[in-house]
Length: 284
Ligand code: C2E
Ligand code: MG
Ligand code: MG
Ligand code: MG
Image (tube, rainbow, N blue to C red; front, side, top):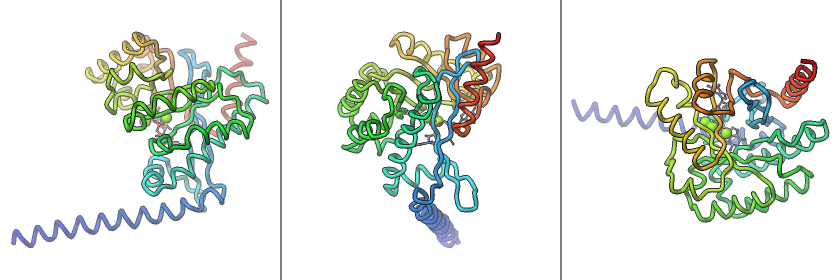
């Protein structure tokens, strides 16, 4: 009996693993055609100061399939990473962001409004990452100082020395760096000290329960204190409520991103947001 039950369990796992593999294959082959079918779009989420004034934006990829159904990056980026398709997607993202930077410069959006782009560990680890990025900037004519790269700790930990060298080369060209999802990885202070990053993004998992969960509150306060002592800008992600904002403000956070201020939106909407906001500022 026990043996039978054991076999059933194994069979159950087999089936679900098989299903998962099949599911991956479906996503992977659809993903392979997505670029040529123009199914990728970059959305932009506002980053603000405490008054909700736009200070930057994060580019977040969206994939609209044939049926116009949107697949979230949380679903397809991991598949892309595992299948090697991330190189193609990553290049598309960088190129699209560069073109947007050029368009926004022409539209009169000031250079202080940086465009942050997510770069996966695999993409950043590629030997040609630096040269290809610089190439995209020069081909599109995008101003490197308007670009910010968001890296996760996993991208850096593969080889800190190499990562540091790449970051320094790109910083020399004027590109800024932000450490994404901070607090969820190693968050080792010794490597943080060595890394020439400009910004730390406090992961939304700590922000979510910041007003109820004492340990989350303590972690966020600790991260904010580290930022002060290392002279790195802090930005909180996933800010959804006034209460979260007040807590963060009270502990010295000055940059925010989250649904409270705005969801990721098409480029034209972000542009509109900037100019209506600006108009109100001029009138008042
Ligand atoms: P991330 O870089 O940490 O981006 C933040 C995610 O939080 C985004 O999800 C954003 O829509 C979501 N978010 C923003 N504000 C709030 C909020 O107030 N509440 C909640 N619950 N969520 C909020 P999204 O767009 O689904 O992206 C998920 C992840 O996929 C990103 O996490 C990033 O790791 C990855 N990703 C997105 N675009 C790209 C890309 O172009 N390239 C690469 N390599 N990865 C990307
Ligand atoms: Mg990010
Ligand atoms: Mg993040
Ligand atoms: Mg995140």
